[in-house]
Picture (cartoon, rainbow, N blue to C red):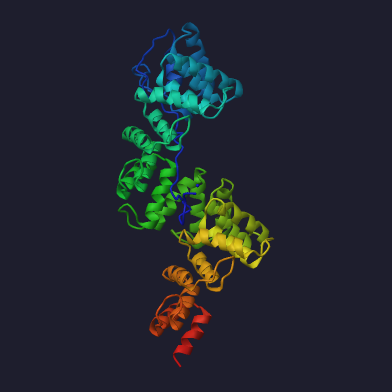
Length: 464
């Protein structure tokens, strides 16, 4: 996720939801009768398929008894081989079976039903088979998009949601079109599709697709989806509780609860954020570096940049039961830095500056990494880049004014080293600043309160 900042964002910070929701089905608008079909309907009909016979409740996919449903539906379909509804239901049972031969047959049956206009078969054929290349069908996003469009145009909310994601990401030969994605997400979200509610929430959070930036609307949508168990919505709602956004009061314990829900579903961003709360003992959790390391590892294995950077810190310092290993730390920092994670860029820059972790000392590479992180507001990187400008290091021309600018940015975030350096500039009138002993003393005092020895010495000197 490159989107995540501070909240692993997390984050994302803003997390994209795939929309591969549970295979709920909506009406095809057709009803087919078949001799001896009652058992097939009872065992394999979907509770979301309004084309199922009247009075049939339907069976949720996770509760479907595949062997019994397959047997019953084969008998029914043998009498009506072209019945799209029965073909769809047998395909659903075979999909639940999950074996290679069963999936191949399921794909054939879904295609038969889809070609006869069965809307939910069109959706399942696209999602399960063409998107993922299963059942002997080669992966084909273009065909998936075509099928989603067919089902979406007939009003299937799940297909509208998935087609919206294809427009958002430019998949299946479709153009990147946030406005069309927003329109489709709105249609599906209004029908209660959790993935669409989550994605529409992201659009309101970021002000995309022609929608206004609106944290309260984003929060409302995340809550609707989170209440349905949608893990990305749970993670996004957790961010809002942690930072007090969208009209919510800050609530670290609720954030921790939601992060745990999403982490337990295997979502990397949730694992990374829950690990962070364990590392610092927040959200009602006891500080536990071992638990944090475990969660960071899980998220790192999924490529979450913030987790890679945090796990790098743990290896660099030998935390969480991990051996101290600066080479592994450098490797992890690089993985995260290459994804734009600012803390990892700053830490990798530091290793290049001092020549650690198996890296040759390289001020130019350090300066490059510090600039990347500084541009994202990382105080440490702003301070180090300021220092490089002050002394003309890393291939940079010596420049006190740029150094003063960067020191101020970092000092305003409470970074002691930058407060001390900026204090020296005020004391001597450098970097385009007017000499101001009172301001210098104020900055030295702030840095001294944070334990900076150079600031303590400077403050004592000024008080003589």
